Amino acid sequence: MISENLLKVKANLPSDVTLVAVSKTKPNEAIMEAYETGQRIFGENRVQELTDKYKALPKDIEWHMIGHLQSNKVKYIAPFVTLIHGVHNYKLLKEINKRAKNEGRIIDVLIQFHIAQEDSKSGFNFDEAKEMLEDDNFSLLENINIRGVMGMATFTDNKEQIQDEFRTLNNYFQIFKSHYFKFNENFTVVSMGMSGDYEIAIEEGSNMVRIGSTIFGERN
Image (cartoon, rainbow, N blue to C red; front, side):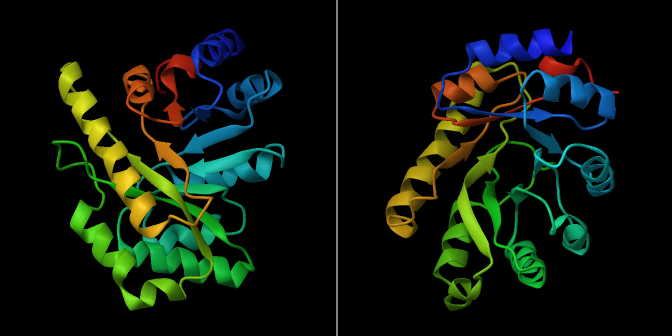
């Protein structure tokens, strides 16, 4: 079923949209089924689970950290993580830079914005992100590469609200691209949309979607 679901999802995605298969809570066998169907990018939200899977599974997998990341856990994933989606404050960004430097790496990250009407979701607001990028110390962070933005919409059946929140994130991306990353050709990612709302997200400008249950079935 997993390979069938995966092929169905991929067939419906525009060619410029990157699929992150969200494999959190799923066993290695399930990931391998997706891997054997051609999927190479997987997303996890717990550091321990991510490091265990990295050790056990093929080394050409690109691992994305998509969950809430605590500063004291960065060191465990710094040696191998491909992209950290949820950079929700400056302190975390500085810690990622420090650990990346220790590993002799440059780690790709996304700035997470709080676009939902739910306090449980974290992220920068527009002014906080602006302040961070204008801080003199920001240019000293040489071991991180900001690839774009990420955000999660409110969990609601109100399609117009979801559209509006995704539109807001895409607007933030456009503003930050033109003001702060104009000459950075790596700043290209708008990561928004999950199993329940990725089609709306793509309509509103997403080029990276995080899909779990539609591929792997409901969470364990």
